[in-house]
Amino acid sequence: MKQATTIEEQIALLKNRGMIIGDEDKAKEILMDIGYYRLGFYWFPFEKTYPAKDRTRSHVFVDGSTFEDAVHLYYFDHDLRNILLPYLSRIEINLRTFIIYHISHAYKGNPLWFVDSSVLNHDYVIHFQKIYQDNIKNNTAIRHHHIKYLHDWVAPAWKTLEYATLGDIIMLCKNLKNNSLQYDIAQHYGIRNLDVYYSHIGTIRVLRNLCAHGHNIFDLRLQKSIKRGPVSNLNGDEHHNLIGALRVLLFLLSTVSIHRKQDLNDEISQLSARNKNLKIYPIVSYLESIK
Figure 1 (tube, rainbow, N blue to C red):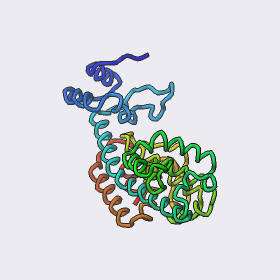
Figure 2 (figure 1 turned 90 degrees about the vertical axis):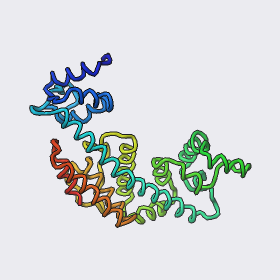
Figure 3 (figure 1 turned 180 degrees about the vertical axis):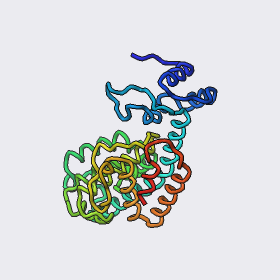
């Protein structure tokens, strides 16, 4: 097992692998601030064997690769995540609100429809009951509900589902026994095919989680391919990469607010303009292509 290394040893290792470090004092400051492991995701693309992660990976850098190049990519990725998060949140909140509203009105006399086996598949109801007891019930607003309404074993849908994760909300929809309700939700967001709808919402979920937890997204590789639908201009690797995910984000954002879509386009354009000299595969020009 590898052992912890000092900042000085880390710098020596990078230089031995061919990285140019112009200001070692600054590099030490950055390594202590960001960390060797985290920055490693951003000098990985400058390696000769990129994107290999198996035994063929040499860790040797392409000639001319600098520590500053990796730091530049790190801050570009950081800024992009911060731009995307509010728009991803806007879609998540809109989706949650519409689902709660639409299904609650479909079962107007049943505010506990989300734990009703006549509405949802039984296995999911059991699963959600555990989520409620382990997580949702601990939220302050839900605790207050149970203090006020002693005989309610769960709070009504419009309270409870505000505290469910996006993943739980997606799975809830997939487990609705009434398929027409699923189609209603998909069509509300301009999608006619359920497989395409869940592909697009799943993509938003992955991108949102990566951004929220500070994961690198510039070289995003989705495990599940984005299905072609209203976002018809997906080409080749865009079914799996950041550009495809951003195309989905922009499409869904346009169904929520066309003005917010334009705002996001403008912010991406401004970020691209500030990073014209980014020394990495043409991620900036890719971003410009999504307009």
